[in-house]
Every structure is written in C-alpha cells, then in structure tokens.
Image (cartoon, rainbow, N blue to C red; front, side):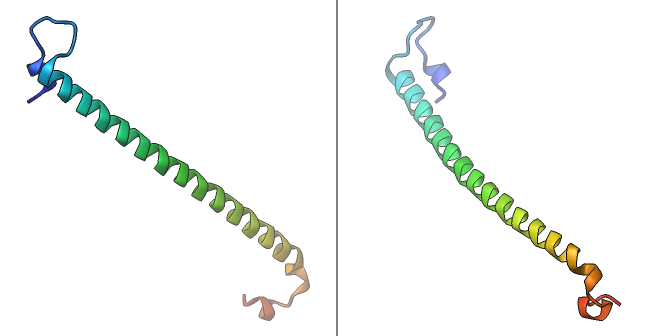
Length: 79
C-alpha cells in the first residue's frame, strides 16, 4: 500500500502504517544513497589511477618520440 493512500485524511503528520511505510522508504533511499556514494568514491579512485597510468604512457611516448629520428626504420618496425 502506498504511504499516500494510508495517510490519515488531511492530517499534517504521518501516523500508523503510513509512518511505517514512510520510514521504510526513507531508509531504502538512505541506503541507496550511501551505496551510490561508495561506488562514486571507488570510481573516483579508479579514474585517478587511470589518469596516472595515462600520464606515464604519455611520458613514455614522449621519450620514444625524441629517439625516433635516431633509430633506423627497420628497428622501429615500420617499413
């Protein structure tokens, strides 16, 4: 039963079953938000790890790019 339907007429407070349903629903939303926050923190950590790995790869590419002119085409593997 929906909490809205169980609400007492025009009362401004939640009573009985309506209060229980409302409290349960709020608890569910709270749990969902906590789980979402945890997943967002985990995702942020993964993004930071990815950023660091990408930065290291770019540094490697920069090092290779500097030496490209010094290597014969056959050694580099293009040709």
